[in-house]
Image (cartoon, rainbow, N blue to C red; front, top):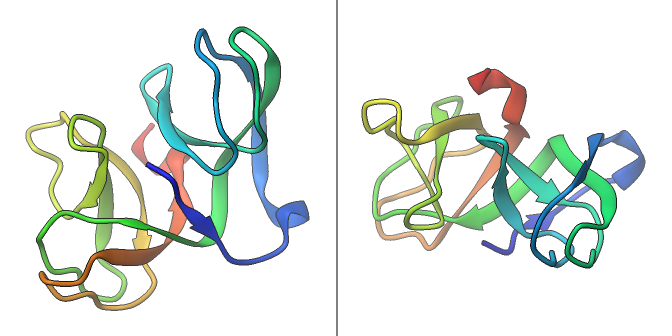
Length: 117
């Protein structure tokens, strides 16, 4: 899923990793079982930075409601944010910054992949 990140990239927390497939900047994916965001465009197997914590990340969401401060999970199978862990299949990845109705297309979160570890 392509996300929008509002804020300074310098304040984001990153980890180095080489993913087996090419990545596009600001794309959310699972890296070793944890949701991460590609910091830049990277070729397959290229060592690069992946964001594991950033404020004000907006992404597509399932047709569910979010409350401000509520838990946000990444559903990799459907490539959306959701409000349920689906018996552990979805990964906790942040906290909703604001409420979002079931009909809204996106939600803004404080992204932190380390919450699910």
